[in-house]
Length: 354
Image 1 (cartoon, one colour):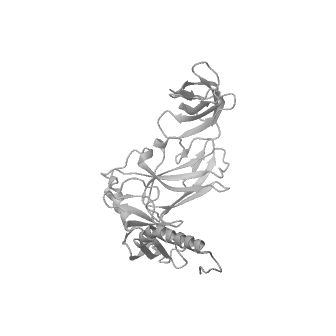
Image 2 (cartoon, one colour):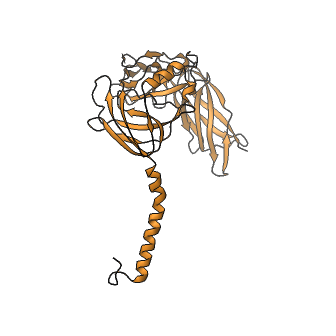
Image 3 (cartoon, rainbow, N blue to C red):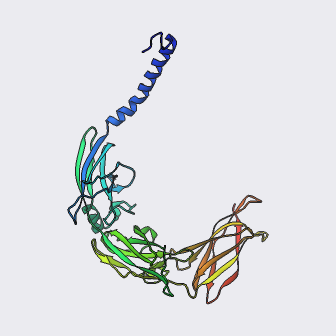
């Protein structure tokens, strides 16, 4: 290879040296790869006893000490026979997390330690998961079963009967305490469970839901989220108790259009009253519910919230900046009550940040 016809003696030595360096650099990677395992298996649908075709399978690491799941593991897509194969998987214990439309994905939206869930919730999740132990230089073969979930369906319309098309729908499952009682439900005590979007007729279907108690809400553009039960207050939302495989139709939501008001004003510096052209604001419910709508100021510091219902709110300044002085501003929150009419002269005072 390194004859006088192709390379000089010096070039040949350089070539061989580069080859040795590359091989030595690759040795740690080759050693690391040799310490991994392989996972193969099939995924089947419990309800049909047929293969789960073209489903996504990922391995979610399990911390045996705390039961915590998350992080990154292997990933594969099943074939037409439901078969999958993963190579280069680090040794450890994993859950097989399968994503297929209409079927329960027990770990979806879950970010808490399993030990903090109620015994019933832990048992429900464990019963629907396949646990896999991967050892170095060995192959693990598993059979994974997935379960058809419940479906919540309905129609979102405005209060004049017009369909609300292209509206996001979200379903959250309420957590239960370690004693098995349902919690009141703050944001941290709910887990995302499903998502859909209304079609041109305002209709939607949220599928693949596991057993549990759910709240469902629509997120129209520039309007407060509206919960099933036709309320913008989460604490007043109707709850749905469902079981995997149920079909729950008639979850209709009406978005208010009549009787809405605009709220407009200006953001100014508390020091000298000059308008702030770069500010972001949120209008929040004073009751503490999580619904918000947002607005930003124009070049003259003015802003407008559209479609605000009657009620008590807090105007919160989340980010404000004066480019001329390069000073950031903040606000502690300003109370606002809307009662039967538009608000057009709201002044939000912002204090410079220390």
